[in-house]
Image (cartoon, rainbow, N blue to C red; front, side, top):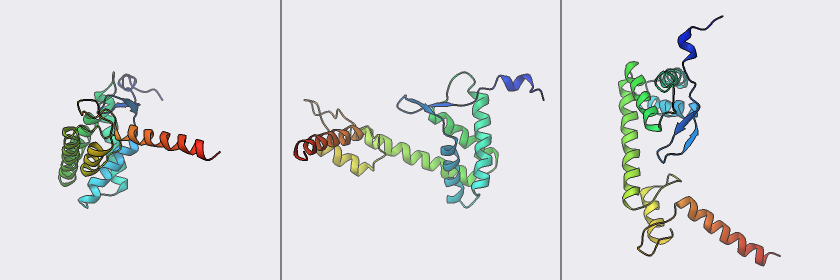
Length: 165
């Protein structure tokens, strides 16, 4: 069966641009999970519906982003659009509110100077910033929580290597 000409112009979404600029593999399951959480929170659907909606999101992304990978925010915008088009306004509202809460958390962490690569609570990020993260001579944080944990792990491994001979 011959596909029509329009189908050949649609690029499959393989990559996504994260908020920090990294380009990573597109994971459709993450979209499904986000939709499912909104559906469950509002008691408006199940996993079967979430998968159906995910297919609509992916199709829309493929049509909109033929030449470049979408940013994570653009994917989230499309999820909102699909939920609204399907008249799932309660789920769309829950999804929008969740996005806003996450944005507020990211902003709080940014204001205390912590790049959160581990999705920590604001309180945990504040404790790390005050007590454990490396700082430059001006007191600015110069490592992420993930880098701090790696630094600690390397230090422990060095000590274990010395004393566990």
